[in-house]
Length: 343
Image 1 (tube, rainbow, N blue to C red):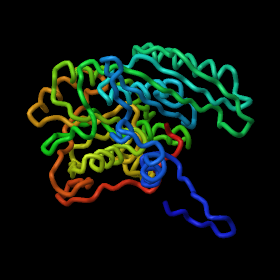
Image 2 (image 1 turned 60 degrees about the horizontal axis):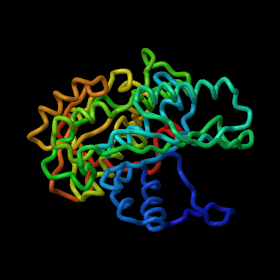
Image 3 (image 1 turned 120 degrees about the vertical axis):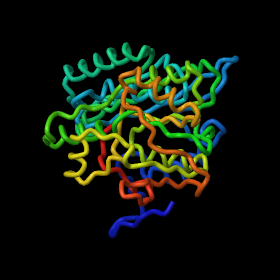
Image 4 (image 1 turned 90 degrees about the horizontal axis):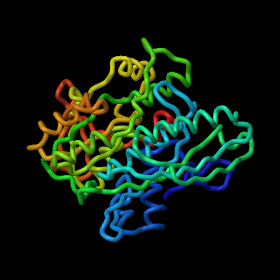
């Protein structure tokens, strides 16, 4: 990794906020993959999938540093449960158990901590998981921004499926489960005290039920990915790069709430890169698309599902979008992230 030099300082790595950007990917490729390289890690999926005594399990972890802690449609507590549950679902795994690690800043109000814990309890109940182990640490005032939460989760892959980027095939259709950008815009609006024609609520939600619906119908689902840090664009780039395929999407097919569209135009944000916490993409066999859309329409978090693109045999790792006037533009990774501290 090339390290930028700051005048008057020793050479050092300067880390940007967020995940899903070019620098984050560079850190993964040049530091973490070489340090911890193994067959499970090299699959580049939302979690590790492995067999234990004939049972296929999935294991994942994530950390949550959202600011503010409470926002329209959710809070750091429910977010920490749904985020990890959803990573398991993207592996085709039924979520079972979670752990939770709390980094608590000195001075955090006890009532705030109670609210967060109660939110996690309700979210776990909704997602049908149990929080079975955890840890707490307290850091000095000014060192923790209220509270940070890490959750790890274990789930069981019940149908022996291998749902991962390696399964993506030329000709697959890409289904998006709903409209984009509501989580990131909701955070920005409350953070900055902005209004965009009404309250925009985060899409934060558990996603196992619609995924389970697809799997029960034995639909040809080859890969799943939730659209968190870095949004749709980063997820597509990750999969295109990992599988070595070209992905093409269509701007007119991508659903946006009008308030989100307006907010992005005012703030100069590209909704393709804005984080979501209740949206995912599914790479599905072309012959199963109609049934997949019908299935997703049965669930609240899949009611807006639509086909937004396809996998091609063109330039490996390339993602392009056809716009409304018929031209194509490359959808690349961001160097950083548009909105830091949103999940």
